[in-house]
Image 1 (cartoon, rainbow, N blue to C red):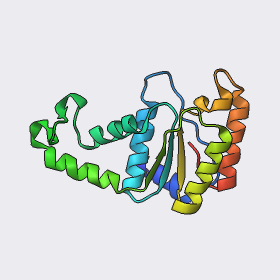
Image 2 (cartoon, helix red, strand yellow; image 1 turned 30 degrees about the vertical axis):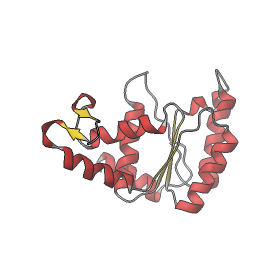
Image 3 (cartoon, rainbow, N blue to C red; image 1 turned 90 degrees about the horizontal axis):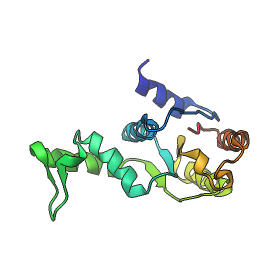
Image 4 (tube, rainbow, N blue to C red; image 1 turned 60 degrees about the vertical axis):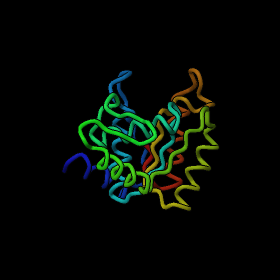
Length: 168
């Protein structure tokens, strides 16, 4: 089973599980989660993404550039989008495909656990979301700056169980 098959299986057949992605600072945890979210939605799997660390615009940029196989320094925004290497049309097509995918992003800063729970519940009920990603759970308001991690994990696990979907 390859990595994407694993994540598709988790999203489609998973139940109320809490999955941790951990690592040292700047090793690529957020990048990994954006790539997984993007790939799943391009396969038609609805994903809810709570970005507690970066605004939606920054998250979109993080998702679009690798998808278009471009580095940020090769992208020029003027009155007309231009890409180095003649990939402008390919980039536009890829961005349009991503824009139409079932990815639901919430970038509320210092969200409360109750608000996150209600929004996640609404995403599952209204959009049939199969996977919730919380990128950077330790920034949930009640757990700042050094809140009880066990309590945080227990609340997130309870959300996963209640909604019967994986929470990452």
